[in-house]
Length: 68
Ligand SMILES: [Zn+2]
Image (cartoon, rainbow, N blue to C red; front, side, top):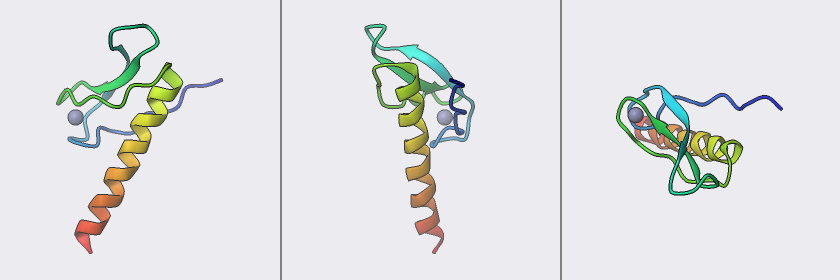
């Protein structure tokens, strides 16, 4: 299974890095190499990537609302 491509950071548009581990190997998250923003923790890298992209989509929607 190929890895999900990460969207740019929702805060600064920077390059995201994955994986990063919280305290345990099963607490994985994506983080931004530019501003240090951390995505939600998932139990594996695939979930962490999904959570990151979901956050990015949410921010894109919010920005769209601001423009209208
Ligand atoms: Zn960032």
